[in-house]
Structures are given as structure tokens and as C-alpha cells.
Image 1 (cartoon, rainbow, N blue to C red):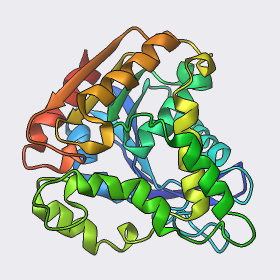
Image 2: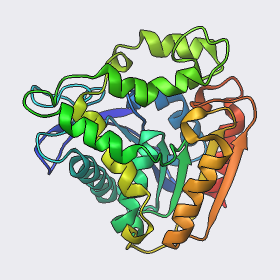
Image 3: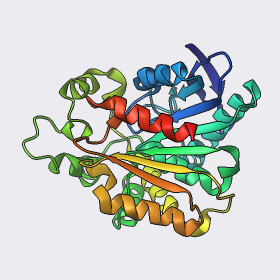
Length: 300
């Protein structure tokens, strides 16, 4: 594994990346992590894919992990348009990968990463071959109200501040879905050791700013509009999720996410639910089943 830095063309932010390169790779796989986490949480999964002859690239999205600076702290995206900054960064990372070699490019996106990916596919699906969407959040009717609230709270010097109200209306709801929970993060995983590691991880211990939530809600609103998917629609897409993951909206939410992409013209979509799993399915006790399902999809 090698760590590298690339410069964002959007605003010159240094983007921290890791690459896992093998000889005679079948394809390149780009992992796009979720909200309030970082690239190194996918180290074990990347090494598994390496063993099956895939190059793997991971990066810290802006405002996460090591992709921060004095202007872009944790949980914040841009002084301009956070949505555009995030999507521009994905394009920069893909361009970097394609300059390294001409292998096919596959995506693996988790949680918020799936929201960004769905928006990225609207204009750029021709740049990738296969897509896995893990723990994909579904569209919520209250998203537009969330955008309005986040805009109001971002006025003046509020953009880099955090709001407990927005947290309770978004992530806070997921904790309430888990009966007999021991922590407010039990919705992430049945694996208690995984939850403990997340709680102790310094790169997982920040809150989204009002700007961060505004960006998130704006992306959620955008991903739900079939008319915005203007690129080619030939990509095979696999949704994988834990059947007890509140973030996806459960089976009903997944079906809504699938139907949005079908309305947009994507017809090669498959869905694999996993019993007795919550949000972070590649960190559950039976994660090998998930690894194998993803590998099977990439090798079809």
C-alpha cells in the first residue's frame, strides 16, 4: 500500500489517497467511503480485493480524514458549493487512476459515498464500468425542508458551526430504530467491537457542520431526479445492504432507490440483502459473505 496526495482542481485542497497495486490486475477499484469516516477503514477489504488481482484506490473525501486544511475542517466541504467540490474531487481521483493504467474502473461506494456516486453518474457514468452501492441511503421527503433549515443555520458565521437539531433530524433518527441499543451508534453494526473502534477513532469523532449538512441534503435531492441522469446507462449496478439498516429505509427504501435509477434508464441492477446485518456490512462478523458477493459481481 502506498499513500499519495493529489491536488483538487476545485480549490487546490490536498486529497489524501492510498493505492493498493498488484501485478497483472484485472481492473481498478475505487472505494468512496461514507459520512464521518475515512479511507483506512477499508484496508482489510482492499487487501482482500488485492488477493483476487484487483488494484484498489481509496481516498479521504474533503472534510474527512487527512483531506482537510485551515479552510476545510472536518465536516465542512467548501466556501463555495460543497456539492460541486465533492463531485469534482471524484473526477480528479478517477483521472489520476486512469493516468496510471488503462484497466477498467469499478466503483465501490458506501453510505454517503453512494449519494455522491449516484450524482456523479448523472454526467459521468461513461467513465466507470461497474458500480457497487453499499448501505445506500434512500431519498427522504423532508430533504427540501432540511436544505432550507441548513441554509438558515449557515447564514453569517454559522456555516462552520454544528446544529444538534439537524443531527437529531438526520443521523439521530437511526439510533432510535435500534431496540435495546447500548450506544447511539449501534445502528452501524451488530459487531460491538466495530462500534467501539468507530467510537475511539479520532477521524470518526467529529460532527458535520451546517455547511456539511446543506451539502449532504442537496446531493440527496439531486440523486433522486431521474431527468438529471444524462450520461450512458450501460453500467451494471449492485445494491448491497443489511436488512436491519435504518439508513437505507429498509426494503422499501432500497426499492425506491432502485426505481429512481431504473426511471433514469439503468436496467442492469441487482440487489443483495444480508440477514442479521446493519449499516456497515463489510465490518460485520459475517463480512466474508459480503466480500464474496461483491467479488462475484465484479467478476461476472
